[in-house]
Image 1 (cartoon, rainbow, N blue to C red):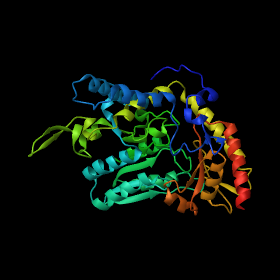
Image 2: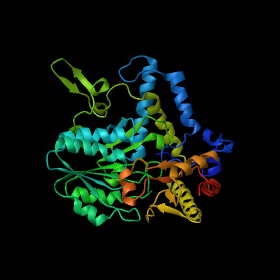
Image 3: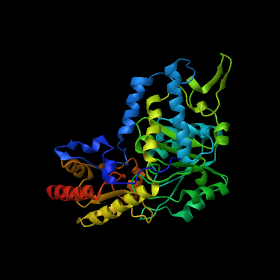
Image 4: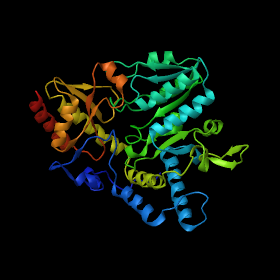
Length: 411
């Protein structure tokens, strides 16, 4: 990991993100949809431009200069990601299209190789659809059972009940680290330890945690950890699957073709070594290379500084939003990240989202790909404001004022 070279200063940080300087509907943009995707610093944008103007070539197996340069840059990004996650081996870092792709890879490869009729997969009531549907599909195919751990009214896992659901039949626990809707931070290290006691493997959906906290996969002892770089201030279309080397080596490939092969005849194909066994076809080269620029940018700061700033934003926003009559926050766990979902009596979330956008404020509305969670709370959807380290208290004031004005128009 790089040493810290810059003291965190939000106003200076904001200058690194060109889009934060633009206007929307005649107002300075207030971007509070970081849970869906984060904005990109200039260094990431420059990395993409550099690849296409200076290095554009297909990687691996090429002998010419451009291919060698692009391959080196791509593999340097993999090394940087190993350090970012504190993985033991570079081969444990698999490039994917994103969190969803990573989960589907594990569901397909691990599920088809390990599941049989009567086995169980355990998820929780706060999972994103991407951590529900792939397990439903593989369970249906294999005759396995999908079990769901409940949550309480604050949006926290009921841990005793979750642990009771882990049995000798449980082959895998798939759990979100931070809920994209509730902001709940789950005690995944403790859950992983409990699952391992029963012989179950654990996949952690880190889509919302990788941008907000230091992730150490060896300390967590996670078997699989997945996330998307577009939420970690990097480019779209590229994600990371971390898997323990010995587990990945034991699994069959997910897709066929390209770099995942060693030899091909019409009679038999032999597969490549890790990590290439799980990276079929031409990868997303430019965006893979730009992941290194995103990680380099983040590593200027300490995670404590980022966390402290975001917690100040969460506390301030929670206090300010609770002054709005009729507003109810969905998800008030003791351990939360910088995400607030809320409903307002008599106001449809979509209508509110449209009106605050007219005032330059970007929030997310709807079920946030967590329809079972919405059903648990008896609602159709919420408005969600999700904060990053480049957001400010002044932007929260703009949000609150915009909500008040929109509410007066709608009621």
